[in-house]
Amino acid sequence: MSTPPRQKRLTPTDITALKGVRPAVCLTAYTTPMTRLFDPHCDLLLVGDSLGMVLYGMETTVGVTVEMMIAHGQAVMRGASHACVIVDLPFGSYQESKEQAFRTAARIMKETGCDGVKLEGGEEMAETVAFLVSRGVPVFGHVGLMPQQVNTAGGYRSKGHSDAEAEKIRRDARAIDQAGAFAIVIEGTVEPLAREITGTIAAATIGIGASPACDGQVLVSDDMLGLFNDFKPRFVKHFADLAGVISKAAEDYAGEVRARSFPGPEHTFQVRPKK
Ligand SMILES: Nc1nc(=O)c2c([nH]1)NC[C@@H]1CN(c3ccc(C(=O)N[C@@H](CCC(=O)O)C(=O)O)cc3)CN21
Ligand SMILES: CC(C)C(=O)C(=O)O
Ligand SMILES: [Mg+2]
Image (cartoon, rainbow, N blue to C red; front, side, top):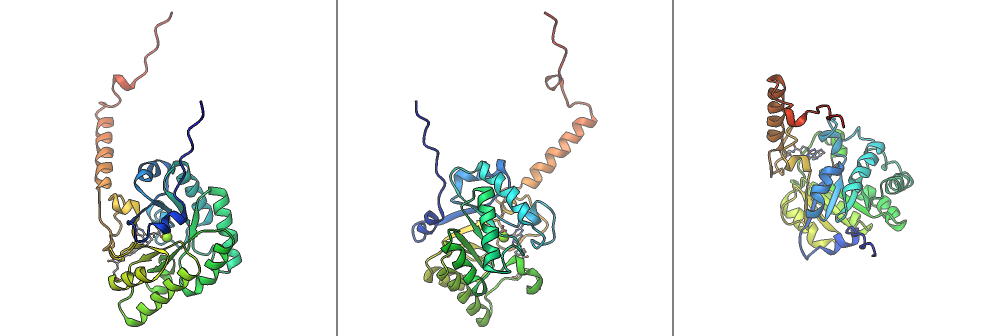
């Protein structure tokens, strides 16, 4: 009896090919059990550096390390059999030079087995994106609201309201597209601009707060599950209230322990009768 062929994950090329065919579905994933639940429903899973905020309680994504991204990238790869898996390059691991970016990307791909990496930036990162792609690293771009630039941007503010800001984002998206990115996240950007970019580049645009005109959508999974409630950007929709479910479970558990009604006989080991 031969073993069935191992199911192959979607490739970055497959994601680009969805453009103009059907919306690409993307969620962030950080752990094996959640990945197993998301994987059948998603085309793309992103091990986002948002994990610093949603899993580790950091104030921003700036403190996230390559080691954290590798540990969670490995966890996600253990649970993914269908979706394409992309890992975020964290702040400080790629901006210094295209060589630094390649070294980090190659290490992450080798140590996790993921399908490519994502990096934030526009025109200033185009040379880096071309360098990576020409050397075998599929690149997912990210323009518009760039969380790793929170300290120079003066906070998390939506983008493209002024003509000058819109023109900059237009140039950023074009530069990353022409550098060979297979897809580009457009974050926190006004609808007409996101629509225009989507219609004029080859890469698939994946929106988060960038309107339904994008080629696909992404959300931070803890946001859409109602698990992360420190803040709620306008683009977040809660598809469940897991925070409520979990706090109720903890409350019930605590009550039963205090009442000595848990554990019951069915959870308790008795000495086996001697033979
Ligand atoms: N849980 C979570 N969800 C995210 O979407 C997310 C993270 N964490 N961490 C990394 C970045 C940070 N992001 C953020 C954080 C806050 C806003 C926010 O408060 N936005 C305001 C903008 C108001 C405006 O300028 O119009 C909003 O009301 O949406 C947006 C994106 C997106 N990413
Ligand atoms: C929100 C997505 C695009 C992201 O970069 C992340 O989760 O880190
Ligand atoms: Mg990110």
